[in-house]
Each structure stands twice: as structure tokens, then as C-alpha cells.
Image (tube, rainbow, N blue to C red; front, top):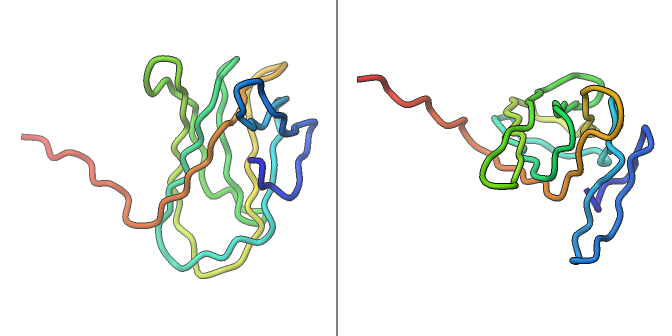
Amino acid sequence: PVNACRFFGGAYVTQTEDGRFPAVNLTDGAGFAFSPVHFKAGEYTLTARGRVLRPTTLRIFLGEVLAAESPFALARAGEWEAVCRFSAEETAAPLRIETRGGEGRLCEIDELRFTEGPFPSAPQKK
């Protein structure tokens, strides 16, 4: 989040005592955006990790189009993540990340990770 070009809805980045730079003050409809991101046609996964204060859904927009959304879930002890999978055509579009949930501060986002490639297959039932 520290590399975002724009924050909205009261969100901002801060430095913590342990040297992290999380996006904080993420309330319903708040978030941050990146200048046009260049995508090749294909499938992408954005994984966000952080701290959740209230039930939160992460929404990913390419330009003005909602590309994906996912609730944050407990991944391992004390670590929350939201995994958003989406497809994109070849384009350069602003990428906007927005949080949705109830009232008050919803979460803090420490890390964003993009991966490109086919979505993982569901396990085969025997």
C-alpha cells in the first residue's frame, strides 16, 4: 500500500514501531489506488494480508469495473488474508482497492501480492 498514488475515504499509510507501513483507517468504502497498471490478457490473483478489526470484504476495481471481491479470513494464527482472483484483458487501467464492511475502522493492510497465471484447480473428488 505504501506505493499507492492516491488514498480515499480517510485511508492513509503510517509507519509502525516495528518498521511496517500498513494502510490504516480503512472504513466502509475507503481504500487506495495505483496509477494505471499494465495487464496482459490472463488470470491474476491479488492476496492482501493484514489485521482485521471487523468483518471486512476487499474489492478490486480495474478502472470503474469491479473485477473481484473476497472476505478477509484467518489464514494462520493472527494473520488475515483476502484472496481476489480475476481475469483481465490486455489493458492499462487504474487499480483501486476498496474495503467494505460495517461501521468504524475495518482493517489494516500490510502487504499486497500479485501473481499471474492460471487459477489453482479445485482438488479432484475421489
